[in-house]
Length: 267
Image (cartoon, one colour):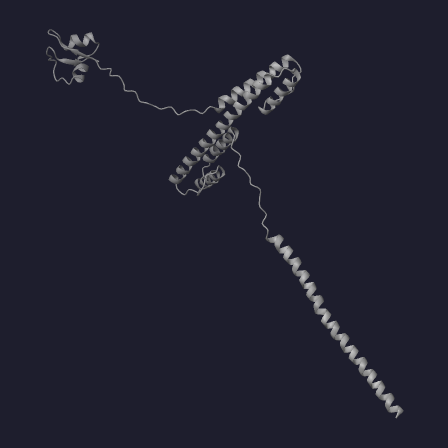
C-alpha cells in the first residue's frame, strides 16, 4: 500500500513538472512574436524616416543670368566670325546652332539648307545687336553713377580721405596700377586717369542711331537755247562748245536746218 502511494505521488509530481514546462514554452513562443512585432515596427519607423528624406526634393538656388558686358559681346562677335570661316557646311551649321543656343535664342534647329543658315545668321546678328544695346545702356548707367561719385569725392575736404576715395573709385573704373596718392601731384595724375576712363566709357555707351538715307533729287543739268534769226548749228555749237553732230543727236535733228524760236538743247 505504501509502495502504491509512493508511485502515485511520484507520478503526480512528474505530471506537474511536465505541465509547468509546457506553460513556460508557450510563454516563450508568445513573447517571441511580440518582440518581432516591436522590431518590425521600429524598422518601419526607420524606413519611413529614410523614405521621407529621399522623397523631399532638393530645390536648387535661383541663378540670375547676368547681363552681357560690351567686352563679352565683342568676344561673342569674334567667336561668330570664326564660325563663319568654317568651310565644311555641316560643321559650320552645327556650330551656328550651338552658338545661337549659347546667346539665348529659343527653338533653334541645325539648319540643313543655305537658306535656313542665312535665316539663322540673321537671328543671331539681331540678338547680338540687342545684347550690345543692353550692354551700352548698362554702361551708361554706370557712367552716370561714377560721375556722381567723382563729384562727391572731389568735395571731401580732408586730403587723406579724399585721396583714398579717389583711389577706390579708380579701382571700380578698372584703372590699372592704382595707388592711393600721397601728394597733390599724384592726386592730379590719378584724377586725369579717372576722367579719361569716364570719357572712354561715355563714348562706348553711346548708341548710334541709324541714319535715314534720303535720296535727293538730282538737279537737272540740261540747258536750252532759243534759236534766233541768222543762227546756225555751227554758230550755236561754237558758242556752247558743242559739235554739230552732238547738237543734232541731242535734239533729234535729221538735218542742219533750224528755225527761229526753236528750242535746242545745248548742255
